[in-house]
Length: 90
Image (cartoon, rainbow, N blue to C red):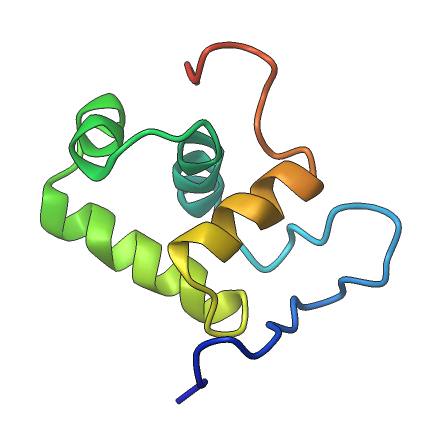
């Protein structure tokens, strides 16, 4: 388990294009909404999934980002321009 405060290694972080191939389309949807600062109930409602399903998507995203936290996943979304310039709609 990763200790808090240690840097997270994002897969393919050195590439110039966003390394999104390791995330599923649904995980990208979740990450996009997460990057807009939406909370779990709002994300689940927008994606028409249960809170349990959303938590599973989040855990998968965090694991694929090398054990990232919610804040680190949001930062990843912003840095890789995963968030759209709209108000969080898909």
